[in-house]
Length: 372
Image (cartoon, rainbow, N blue to C red):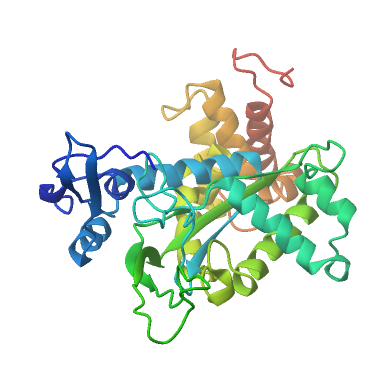
């Protein structure tokens, strides 16, 4: 294979800086030349001892860029109406073993985050295969699989109606190396396999501990969109637990389960990221006040003769709508009544209600009437 490497790879210290772990793995591989270059008799020897693997594992660190990426993805899912979930690895996980690499065992790294991840294309393929494995008994007939995931190369062209996003670790994952031991490699009829051979262990990197953020969205105009997205989430959860994803799933790799603690944390973070409706926010603040306090406050905020009068029409509109959400202005004040003791008779109570209605109908330009 053609491989561009750096001459300073053996002396580079990646554990103490913000090195991209994917570049460390791909480019800073220790190799030694032996033989004579002038005659072309050159041998390239890979020097991958435990220290090299330790350096790669140590270079995988959490970065503020990952936090920002997660926040952006969650915000996108909120606005698109997509589904997402946090899933914790219950076994070692590896993806991209077949990728070209000097060690002959590759790994998929996110190009900018520098973390092992699951590409969206791999996730979509996994979901299609999981749906096909469950079959009609679980509600996944061939036509529905084709409608949702799109056509196979051998089918008539059909657009997919679900979009998956790259599954990335929420925090820096823990990496370690595992070992393959091919006992009967490179045998021939003249040199058959046998117990007298000396197997050479082959190391490869795996993700030992990780929590992945997996997300997808079905087209907004797809029929029964909510039902389909819930069905896909159920398929995702069951598939990750039962089938596994990535390489070597047949020997127990790539199993995941929902991480509810991390899910709740991300939900709280998302709530902070999404701007709250000002009416709802003010309503929450007003709920703790008594009716008598609100009766006095409405006059202060909405009566132009008071010094606390809200100057902007939009402020008055938001305030009035928040007060009306409390319920009792509509059910009691409107009819000149109050739930509890207030300082005023029936006419005064009705006047408070009229102030609220007038403020809700006030336009931004200060005129009155229902906004266009």
